Image (cartoon, rainbow, N blue to C red; front, side):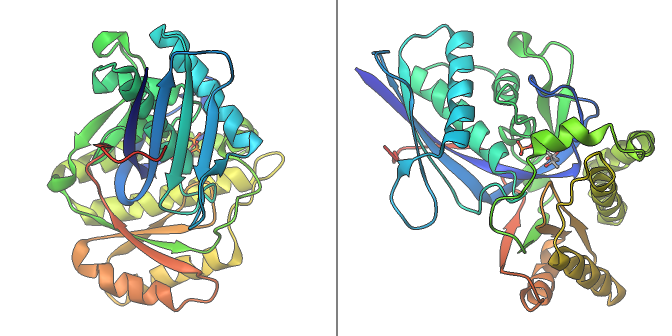
Length: 338
Ligand code: DP6
């Protein structure tokens, strides 16, 4: 007898970033982060639980239009490791078959681990028939090693971590600041690099403290966190935008001045940043942010989304423009990938 569950989980874009860990293995961050859960950028994951444990977990993925194929070793190792963690924590036996796909290019600073590990965690719990409070789901997603996955189990605007014990004893879990309906912001994404990036976020976290700029960013964070929380509470885009852009630039300054340095930006990243500054000079309130990658997420209010998308479309080096916005969080699906 086997049981299968499928979950579609969105990615998220951080307004205040997770960069640097107290415990990287358990993804316990140095500073709180705040993100907006996305809608059109998501991972879909089916997990089948088999009672026999005669062989290893089987991991399949699909990229683009092709069929499902065995996932490459580096990715499969991370997935297997997380499945083993979940098996240990839930005390279940057996093994898993997994199939996963993304609606957007993976591993290019598009938080594919966030949506992927959130979907994997929730689908595994579904296949095991285990229900638990969202605090615990978030803490389990975090144990994948992808800290940002802990934010993707919730919709709307999300902060992570709350470090006291949550429901069921969960620690370092994410919580919702406002739901998606409360503030329908748009995110227009300029894809300038769709292939994998050279340095993983994990390596970036490891190197973060070697930057002479690390302390400066840490000192700035309390007031920035307060401003972002207030902006979300009061739906104040004029307060939010400048903080989000300055924070993203700071993160990349830390990365570029780490030892050894990490350069995520491509020439077209700068082209997009410049275009967004020009948009603002022309009266369009749009602000840029980048995760650990070259692609630029331009945050704006819905009435400006067309103008932003049009501007980004024609820029040199921009391969594709994706329109996204705040989303409601993960959903169970009835159609399975396996
Ligand atoms: C720059 O360790 O969560 O996106 O697993 O690759 O998504 P992935 O990375 P993770 O670090 C995220 C780094 C970040 C900032 C953020 O999302 O908070």
